Length: 292
Image (cartoon, rainbow, N blue to C red; front, side, top):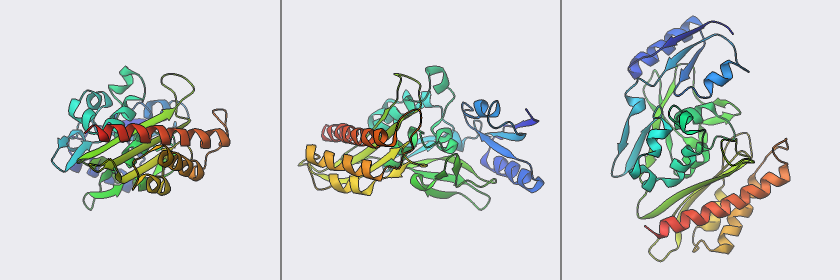
């Protein structure tokens, strides 16, 4: 292992200043939210020297605001804190369930949704869930905050849009209105604490008659990034989200998936299962929306 340094700025301005200074000096930096992935990586595949910039002490990254039209969720909030928030669990059950799937209870005391996204694994559980519920990433940069839809944040395996002088502050999520609800499901070989073979997030809105008026579907672990599935959403909109509509949405997800074959599953298997998860998550989201 090489040399490491640690900084714990208490404001976004201080964090940006540290990142800019390091970039000017040609020093590598890495943001630290919970560190549950970073610490594993630095002891195995990525041992190079760097300066860690801890965002846990930055107020903006730890803020949680639940407004009438929008929720702001700081990137450094521990999953355990989100999992115990009854209002969030009722409002965004799919997203909170996705966060609750990551690691053990002990891990969730440190792990964050922001860190899961910035790790940018194709199998990150919260990524399809964030995409489905319309989350927008708020990024601090030297020129001021900028916003990027979550589906555009991850650019490849372990890569994303963040520049060396930027960091993720949090997420803006539209507050679900009326009969709107989300759901996320994944498949893993074991019962707990495993990496998704595939996953599917669905959010939809029903009118008073039970017809779907809006939908968004995202699938994970079946391509180098999580994918939005427009044809799956189109299959649900204008229907009662019945078996035929759900089967069409499942077929659309399977058709768009671009998985690989590895020890966790074959291409054919993953394409089939991601369709099944889309169908099941769609039915859960429908039932949740109908109950509102």
